[in-house]
Image (cartoon, rainbow, N blue to C red; front, top):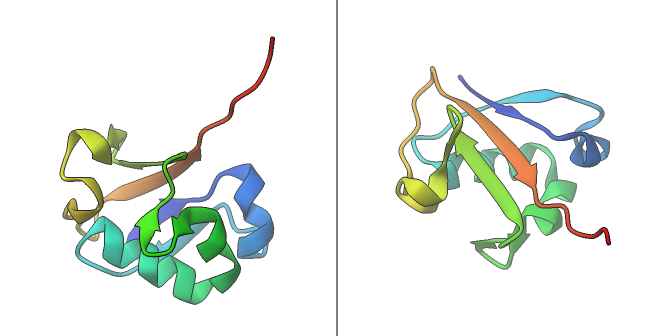
Length: 90
C-alpha cells in the first residue's frame, strides 16, 4: 500500500495517525481514499474537487507540481507527504 505522511496540524483529523496507508494509482486517487477514511480532512485539503493551493504534496520527496500534478502516478512502494504552507512573520 502507498503511505501518506500526515503533518502535525492535520493529525487531529486522522485520530493522531502520523502515516496512513492508502490505495490508488494516482495522487488524486490516494487523496480520495485518504479523505474517505478520514472525511474531516477533505475541507482542509480540497476546495471543491481541486487541491487547495496552499497544500503541497510530494511523492518520494518530489513536488507533484514538478511532475504531473494531481494526475501523478503512484505505486505501492511510493511515500507521499502532505506539507501545508505556512505564512506569516515580520
